[in-house]
Image 1 (cartoon, rainbow, N blue to C red):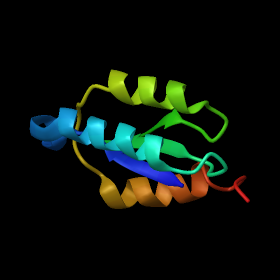
Image 2 (image 1 turned 45 degrees about the vertical axis):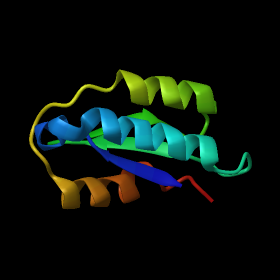
Image 3 (image 1 turned 90 degrees about the vertical axis):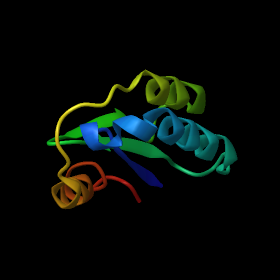
Image 4 (image 1 turned 120 degrees about the vertical axis):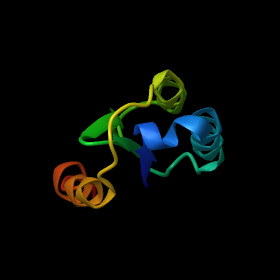
Length: 88
């Protein structure tokens, strides 16, 4: 599972709600599920790869600050090619 989090300024108004929703999702997935979290604004930001423990993932989500513009389509393409090539 790869969660794509909009960390751009456009998400600022609801950013705490977004972060809480992501943390809740982390709590609900199965232990055997692999999880990565990628933030995007003008660039991709790997927040947590599949080797990070769930509590650390939630800590990293909590620490994210919004900023920059939004490049959704470039971020999806970049995530597929940069972060997911090794996941089987």
